[in-house]
Image (cartoon, rainbow, N blue to C red):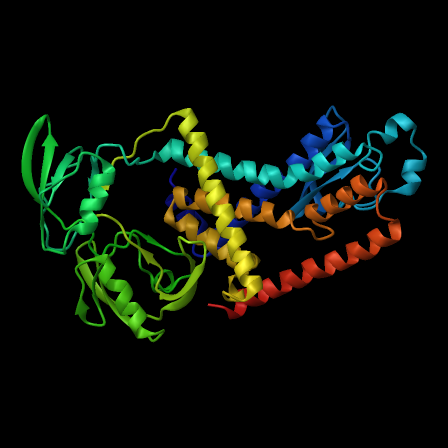
Length: 448
């Protein structure tokens, strides 16, 4: 079953909630399972593993004595360890602890050695990072990867208005525009250097025989993907659409679109779109977006939310196991660096605080990603999991990072913070988290 079939069955708008809840439940389960399994390995007993809050819908107790339950509000979860006063594990249940033997106290979060407590706390965010890597690795394994040293072999040719191409799937591109292309890297370089034209000469290897055919200009104004919460998404532009004109001015290549949008300075822009043999006009308003630069900084630009695509899609190769791990790690590091630099830029006031998003935006993004297909949905799920993992590592009481700060204090001083200090800091942390959530929800409603 394709994701499009699922969306059609759900009906208009329902996928946003459905796929958001699916994403959150997967991410929360992995996060809490990290706490649970490392705690168990460390000798700490989990009394309850709950997916969701509120009224319990289903529960069962396993052979280890842990009650696994599904609750009515699927917007979070928790693991309650033996001796905890509540689900946050911040405070011990003194009455319950007083009734335990020394051996049983070792099985509580508060009676376990410092290393066991720290490892159990750290495991939640680390499992989110692991989920990100697993998803990235699965995506590379399923859809393959195009390496610079691969031969440029065509997997498909995109439809373009008024153009009959001589290219076929499985053609290996030996040269384009008279420039030799022995590998993908040289193909991409040749493509970037080509001037726009109605057609381009391709020399290809087809069935063991070299032949010269006429093909499309490789970088036409094709929408490769459509960004979530963008002007293009709201206007109904779809991947594969071809932009014929901007404000009545014809465009031949995707690179022509950006300067015209920038020149509009946020005023409405009219686009002429070609889709499956039909042309139509639509109007959209570009939005200001903060984009990461190669040097690590950010730039603010007016965007409509489209990315480019080649007229010919190259065949991807299935990577080996080690390459899968390497690519998954590299992608995780890249997203982590981008996320951290974004947070720093917001704190410094270098980019808009509208980049802080809440649950509404997350739901819309997941719904839009689901519309675009499994690859987009899984990639967005991986990024969201990493973001939640990083957020939980912030040194704020009530978050995992706050607990790790308390453990670090105990490691240095030889004793944990007092119950009074823990209570006060927990309340401050809770106020900060709730304040941030309210601010993020406010951004969801007022920022575009």
